[in-house]
Image (cartoon, rainbow, N blue to C red; front, side):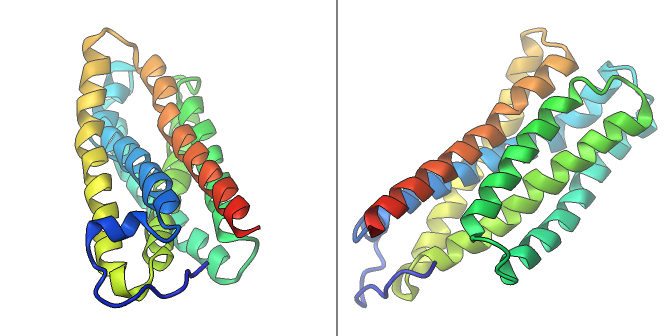
Length: 210
C-alpha cells in the first residue's frame, strides 16, 4: 500500500492533501482520532464506571490494567497478521474495529460478574488498542518518504486531539446522569466511526485506482 514517491521539498502540511493523499489524510486520521478518544476515555473512566456498576475497588482497577495489557497482545497479533499478508491490511483494520465496537457495546450487558465483564474489557482492549497500534504503522507507510515525517506528525496531532477529547466526553456523559451500562454502549460509537472512516477510505482509494 505504498504510494509513489513525491517530489523532494514538499514537506508542507498542504502536501498531505495533494496528489491523491487527501483521502488518507482525512479518513485515516479520523479513525486515529476516534480510536484514541475511546482509549483515553476508558483509561480515565473505567475504574469509576466499574465502581458505580457495583464492582469492588480492586476489580475496578484491574479492569484498566486488563484493557491496556490486552491492547499490547492485540497489537502484536494484528501486526503479525498484516506482516504475513493474511488478507489486505485495510480489511484487517476495518474488521478489527468493527469487532472492537461490538466488544465495547457488550460491556454494558456484562453485568457485574467478574469473568463476563473482564472478558468484554479484554476483548475491547485487544481489538481497539491493538488495531490502533497497527493503524499507526499503516499511516506511517501511507505517505511518501519525502513527506513521511509531516504525515506522521499530522496523524499524531489529530490523534492527540482525540486523546484530549476522550476524558472530556466521558465526564460530560457521566455528568448527564448516564449509568455505566449506558456509557459503555454509547462509547461503542467511537470504534464504529473509526471502522466507517476506514471503510470510506478503502472505497474511495479503490475507486481512484480503477
